[in-house]
Amino acid sequence: MVSGDIVNGIGAVNTAFSFIPALTVEVCVTQALVYTHWTDLDDGANPQPIFQWHTTTSNNSIPTKIMINNTNYITMRADPVYGAVYTGIQIK
Image (tube, rainbow, N blue to C red):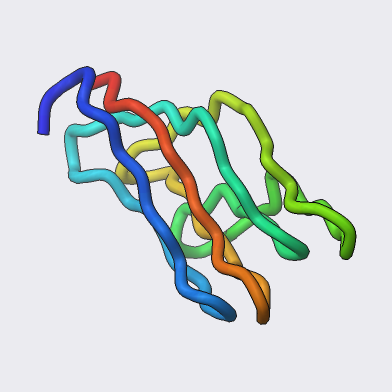
């Protein structure tokens, strides 16, 4: 992958998954979609919610700019009914 490439991922229903870029890669996550669960900024030891919205009436599509790398990355926790997705662009 090179700078400017689009990255995205889809998590299965009722699972947690992480997006950890390669060692020298940095990514700007520009959109995250969860239903009733949350997205963490994670370092492998101390995950912290960066958004945690709970609703039963609509998806939470969160336009954002989350800069991640191999040290600080995102972990998403998908809903029991719906999965979770993210998209972004490689910046380094």
